Image (tube, rainbow, N blue to C red):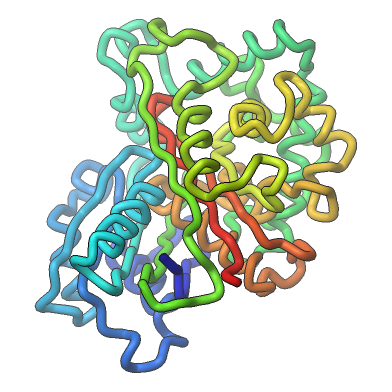
Length: 375
């Protein structure tokens, strides 16, 4: 199974509607395709919560009409912040089943339609009502996880700040990123506290944007080599531990097995760093570093653009931006460009295997996708 082309919009605060952003991303993905490759058997559209954020629904038919693809089967996929990767996985299943040969996937979110307070209330619905009633929010959940990890492994807030510094530097080289400004450790530590120990620069921004790609049986330069998808207990209090995500570990194990590789074979990673602590925890859950050792790798330059294992060369959710429905597919776009040698100033040398890791909810749902340069 192959990805023949990808496209995305610039992430940030955009004036366009959700449908316009999705149309832009889709046209970017298919503009270079030969005319006979622009006919699709199916359209999959992904967005987390357009009904409440932009008061739109029936997105499958709407985007099919926007792209002049009708009549065509059109589906809408939703899986919280893992919507983008889940939409890709669904396209893979459709094509591998033989039902369709070429599927267009378009995902996006228009988050700036709501205030920060309104969005926080909407996103908190990803958690059980009983936990929400205790005042738990996504930043608060992550802050508790950060404190647990810091206590267990000796991480401090200065260490944590290095994640944001790295990813803002990477984003400064990415023309599609929401933030394109370098920052310092002092900038992070002096930013306002959101939920102790997390500060403003530890958190991904509110972003608008869309991403798109084409999944096909026809051989291309980039192959979908492995998929893994798992869910865990919805209730935080029922989890086995508070310094890792079981769903991520299980999904990664499945993806490695399907791709017939080991973690050491991965050349480049895009992981779900909605908060800085998550980059460290995720890369350990993915078995890329020993438990508690990811910060040492970061500070030693291992995860920088010119390191042995670059992490989030796009800038990650932290600095590239996090339009929720688009995030998972945007990770795949970055890996596609890297594997084809088209990432320009942030290009990783000799990248042959890329891994994307996308979380839905607060670690209760995780998807891992492994791409390879085709032989």
